Image (cartoon, rainbow, N blue to C red; front, side, top):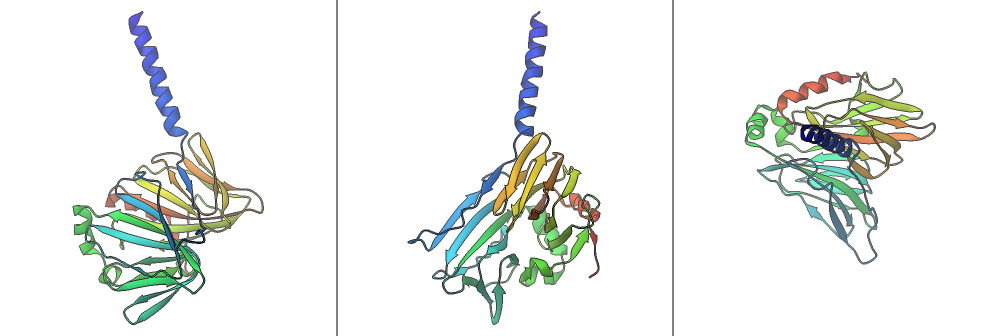
Length: 275
């Protein structure tokens, strides 16, 4: 009788843990407004969700100039999602518009600020560089690590993928071989449409909802509404998908953080389109 009781308890306990983990899709909603007396706000989001990855939502007013710091232990990605500004690097000037990505790489003396009477909202992703990463990056093309990477999302190459419909526009906004074990892209379509269910145990993934995104995300038995200006974490290894209802828009950034560089073979499912 005691053996039967223990077995029943263990089964119930395992089911309970399975239910808890399969039912959670961590998500945070971004507060986009500065208070009247605020010049800047900085909030870390989805804290400790992915080992070695830090996500921050930062809003600055036009009275603030941000100077980019280069770190030997981390690589940083800037995703400008709202507002307009100027970025300078040496004698070069870049126009910041919504939905622009920037990597400083090894370039020093980079700074940026909003245009007068505007504010800038951006997501700052900081990725720890392991010793293996530091060795791997030595094999990357020189231009990928020694020059600034600055692109509007819409200027990036598009690709197709079997899990997406022909009406979907997907773009690779950060190819691999810029930051070890990291790649990013966008997905955009009008409903009714969906990104089919799939799994990838070789990577961690964040989704960032862009302007007008109004979708639903599924992961195993969990479901969550995924609106514009929100950040969520796809549970690693889960069977996940995204759907959008008729006349609504799907528009988000996916961010892949691979466990090791062998996992980047997953990106071969992306078939680059010639435009």
